Image (cartoon, rainbow, N blue to C red; front, side):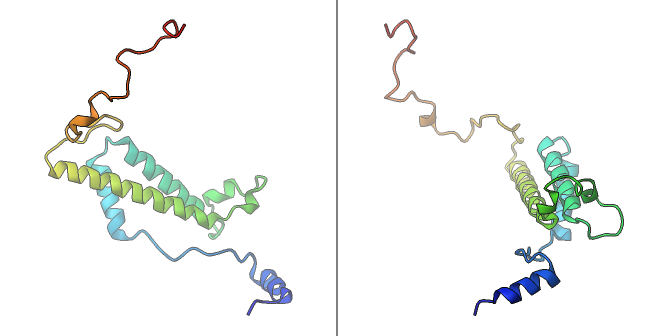
Length: 151
């Protein structure tokens, strides 16, 4: 049974903004230990440090004005349109950063277990590439076309 407009108005007046709430998930001590160990072992991987910084900043933003002490959100709360932002949703970016960090750490562990050094990001992998990948396509021309050849 849908609520009447009077009930909705009363709930908004008494309860404030009734946005969909996030679940009570947390990162957990085990995940944080794995991520911290990954940062220590592969301390030269810039991706891990970038994602850790994004996760920590977003976690600090997600506190909002919940504490009576100073929070990072107090820097932004006075800017225009910031009252439309729900600070607790920043925790989603913290989860995303933690998941990406976990993926990088698992990739490093898998490569170390296979006896290979992790390749730098963006470098082509020649070990697992199939031979057909490097062959010339039957539809490609034998010589590259130039603007003068099209006259």
